Image 1 (tube, one colour):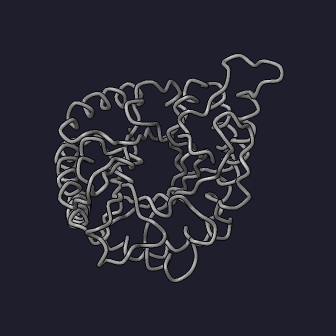
Image 2 (cartoon, helix red, strand yellow):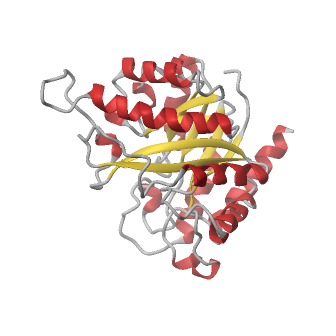
Amino acid sequence: MSWTEKVCGMTWGWTGVRGTWTGEAAERSMEEMAKLGVNWTAIALSALQEHPQATTIPFREAPTVTDDEVRWAIRKAKSLGLKVCLKPVVNCANGTWRAHIGFFDNEIPGEPSWREWFASYGEFIKHYAAIAKEEGCEMFCIGCEMVQTDKRESEWRQLIAEVRPLYDGLLTYNCDKYQEGYVNWWDAVDIISSSGYYPIGEWERQLDRIEAVATKWNKPFFFMEAGCPSREGSPHRPNDWSLPGGPSEEAQKLYYEDMFAATSKREWMRGFMLWDWPAKLYDASEASANDDYCMYGKQAAAVVREHYTGWQQNER
């Protein structure tokens, strides 16, 4: 576990819709994000395959952001003194969660296959790995919450081997919540990361479990995603962005206080890329009515700023 840096990060720009990553609104968004005491950002974009069994990822087409937009976002973040993890993600255009992308275990003639999908996914990932190298990104995330793909160990190892000559920074894979112990190829990446959407009050138990995984693989660990909508009930189901309930800054604030209280006691836990910060912010006067993850103008922003600032000061 030689990597000891603290990641006080925020995910920026999701989902990466073409035309939204340039201009005054995007500039202002990233500048406001930097005021939270962040030292890292995960610049996250998505490409759309048609459905979970599609084998083509048309990442060069709209609505995915252009390469110029990606380069602008990286350069803007760096101009603000932030380190960057580039995070290309595949989504399904029909709304199915990417965790359900999957194919028959054994290839069948005439049926879509893992081989076909990984060929397209590999082209997608290697394209952005080259950009990450050219723009000096300190980290690159090769996948996010691809639960049904996690068992395809040989394909992931092959893809990582193909990425290494293109990108020489830190590689991570963002597994889904509760899946940290089920990935059998953590040795192939530099850092283990996961989506930490654990219910309020459960952090100690989940951290005990994750610590055993990090120790087993002797790898550093951080949460590539974590957060909670500012919505009633969300602290108990923080991964459910569609949960019914009225806006509640207090609920979000309490969740962050609980999460930071638990994780700050774990020296092995290297930090967060919190979820999330859009490329175009709502007006601060509308913050109390906004029930999404972004904490701009909300009570949770002060909690994040205080924790991140203190965490970095303690590292000096």
